[in-house]
Length: 257
Image 1 (cartoon, rainbow, N blue to C red):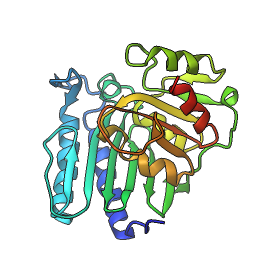
Image 2 (cartoon, rainbow, N blue to C red):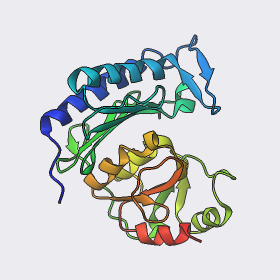
Image 3 (cartoon, rainbow, N blue to C red):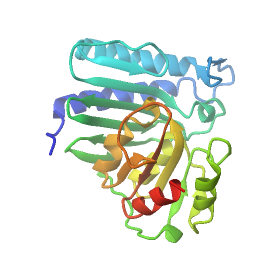
């Protein structure tokens, strides 16, 4: 078993991530919000850029030898084994439309793998904070996954069920499974799995900064998270599935169809 993450480092990460998440509220639902379009066609705002810069600056002062990877700026390569991964606003499409379901994400990996995973939902006043070996906390209380064991009794979410993002056969398998399906997407969907509100969150393709925190969050909540093929390697544009563990293998079979 890998050792728990250092408590002081976890506390530092929680504080920095919360401050950055709160910073985004300065731009939320503002009528004069400036929206730019990145090369990949996704939206970006001053809130994204400012929140990421805040976290980068804090890590640079506290952990200057660590590598920092972010969605909005180039990678800063360090000499230590630690790697921080920042998604300042996950669900920018929600953020720019004034929908409060966006999140602010921060993860840290060390020589043992996933070590810290933080989900903040600043517009909802909610957070899910997990450290390896320390458990997971939802607004000051222990977070746990649901105990439902049957797919027809489950609620399954995805950031979108649109094609061609979803392959046809897996999509039909999920939609015909008898489960309730919803599009509570992006980081919010993984938050719902970790806090026991739903049983599974599935995305066919994600960037590393979208999913990195969940590799600590979901296990520390008692759940299971893998790629669609059952792996655990963090790579861009992999499909991921997070569950309460009870329905995980059955879902993997559906997704491999």
